[in-house]
View 1: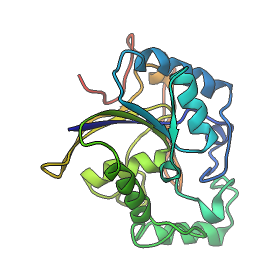
View 2 (view 1 turned 180 degrees about the vertical axis):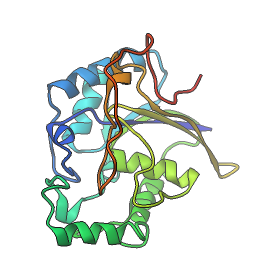
View 3 (view 1 turned 60 degrees about the vertical axis):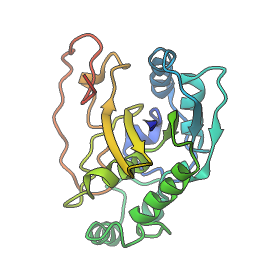
View 4 (view 1 turned 30 degrees about the vertical axis):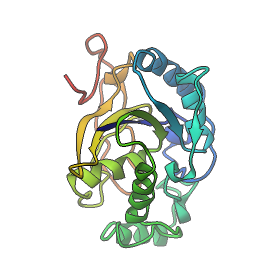
Length: 234
């Protein structure tokens, strides 16, 4: 059985500003570098057979800070979906016709390419499945990638998103663990959005509210218990 630890990259200024990043090679900000360093003691004791990353710098820098001195292999198939007409924009900055195109895309996100892009969610899922097919059938590997990619991996197990919503909270440096049983052609979600390595996980706002008009969920600055985690395995 193969267990993959999918890790979303740490924070960038564009994350903070709510901008679509896609293939734009945005660097981590200071907060993101601190988040990535918090991953290091979390990951250090885990015996990974290999570590992989998207070739975009926000993932690579997260990987290098989280696994200092460790070999990191890169693969373009671990990149985020290109965000077409809105790459670099916030929802508020998108023209009305672009917003409407995104609303239309959400009616069939697996069949339609993202507006101005070349990929649908089905295309993203397929390239990730192609990458997984080249991995060993047994062991444990680590993959630093992007929010959209990881959501596609989870949706492959749980079913697609509904009602123009990402439907899965996933913060920066959130860990998602999936076990793949090639013999039985099954997969199991073991943990989702594990942020136990971050001391302020409970005080953070929603990790991603794009693309589209989605309600902002109130959050509190009240500290949670020691080693807080979100939906992590007991």
